[in-house]
Image (cartoon, rainbow, N blue to C red):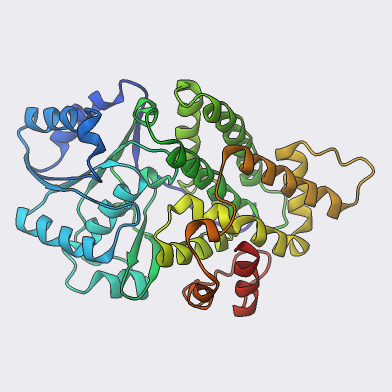
Amino acid sequence: MLGNFSYCNPTKLYFGDDSLRYLDAELPRYGKNVVLIYGGGSIKTNGIYDQVIKFLNKNDKNVAEISGVMPNPTLDKLYEGMEIARGHQADFLLAVGGGSVCDYAKALSVSVNCKEDPWEKYYLRFEEPECETLPVGCVLTMAGTGSEMNAGAVITNTKTKLKIGHVFASESVMPRFSILNPKYTLTLPHYQMISGIYDIFNHICEQYFSGEDDNTSDYISEGLMRSVICASRIANKDPRNYEARSNLMWAATWALNTLVSRGKSTDWMVHMLGQSVGAYTNATHGMTLSAVSLPYYRFILPYGMQKFKKFAINVWDVDPAGKTDKQIAEEGLSAMESWMNELGLVMSLTELGATEDMLEGIAGGTLIMPGGYKVLDHNDVMKILKESL
């Protein structure tokens, strides 16, 4: 383990097929004026909305709603929510949905009382909130982002075609509690399910593919990756398998609650590439990651050979006997590619609607992160994007 670090995660989790009942214990802790935040309305057809409203009414909450939060929450939607929350004099934000809804709630939390433009302050200058933040609770309906137990929030500016995530340092931004009921994920469309699965897996990869020391965090990551691979194969054949879906939901949370990043550097370039693609195509987040992952990893493999070798042996059970380090590492990525194809993931930017004339703009909108095995320049980014088409 390298360096000095602290670890604190204040989010309380309630997990299981009867976990929503704990909402009744949490709601009395917060003020009367609640803003209920959700997406396109599926929670109304599957009954979750009625169950949540029942608890809100039982606790005598005054409820305003922000509906229609999109898979890639936009800045315009954030501005709309700020007006609703301010007009309601909100005391508490309750997000019911997937990671985008949770992200949106956290972005709203730091923006409602902010005296500046939140885009400028948080997403261009990456500053921390100086205003009072609103407490957030989450009822998760889709596994993937890990947003239910971290302080990250991704917002898309459709005018400038920038999709930017800010992981806030302030613990006050993290959800006070999150309710994780795997049954809520069982009816997701297959495309959304596998997209979420790859998001989980790539979150772990982003923290794994960095550093050269013998690191406990990497061993935890390898175990999580093996769990995701196993559960994903079961869920891909039987989407209603509760055990597999519960393991995926739990793995998603631990993949991005900062645990496996402790004591090491992290990469995040696949996410930077994918987010810029998403700003141009509005494609599903996990699929933007799957489209660029293998070209990126094959590009940086020579610079992180030993970790890719470890990945091949410990995650994909590649037999190293009689093979060079390069052969072992490449075999690991080939095994990963076979698994991705098995799930039915998007494997090229063309499938997402990206065209060659978009690449310069996508490259220009790609934030460069310094923590991986190679700090990319513009030409590197362009080469990876072209390989991803």
